[in-house]
Length: 371
Image (cartoon, rainbow, N blue to C red; front, side, top):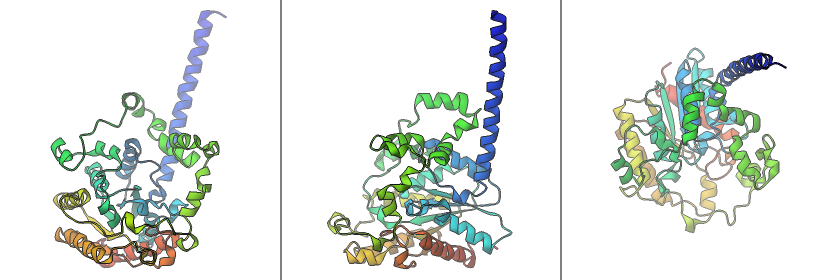
């Protein structure tokens, strides 16, 4: 074969490859767009910068009345199997039934382990995007956490704090969590090929988990490489079961800390972040409503896992601090029947449905969402 023929064949192959990649890109964009027609049923599959940025981009592109639900694993829905059984999903369903002409779009930005510090940086990330209402779950358990920030990738979104302020809050200025290779790929590919941009979602929808996390899991059990295999793990099945079906002896130890046993002062980093969060919301005139996460007091009291006097006192201080900044707080501390918990704080689908109904009706009846 002549060299000219080889070049001709290769050129044709390259054309087909480019056309194929373009078609894949278009197809995947259609799939992503279709998935985010119901953003309330999309949980964050990972908490790295790229994934969070993708969610932020979807919020920015969305039309209608936009609500972002912020919080921890209670919002994320750790105790439910299906994404449409999460709290944000039920809030969306309830509000759209109550206000069918408002075109309400609800986004789930629940991050497992998110304390006030994480929420502060997420709000930083959303600073330039119009959101009609933020809903944030206040889980008192996070005020006893000594580690200032669990998810360091969120520091990539810091727009307001100097290096000195970060240091005072127990955080060192971030050495970027994005590798030079990722930066190069982002600069040269991500802006041109959407499949790369949204690769985490593709992994999640195909395998039930980002592929790199599945590869880590497979080191201890190769069968975990199978799609959605983690749903069959004993610890996952136990997490999603009602709390009364589990054995709690040895799992709940009051000597390791009881709910409510913390002090709200300047040595408490989460308290400092909470006050910064309130100031940020007030200064930026952000529309926000907080709610107190329901707790399974029957289980907590059975194993002496709650410091009731301190819990009540700290709860009052946290609520009043928000109200002093004109941020409303809805208190659902004891609002859910205890049968609808999977543990001390995570709700089963039935619990999420009841809580979503209470939140939705309160938002409308108290005027936080206008009819």
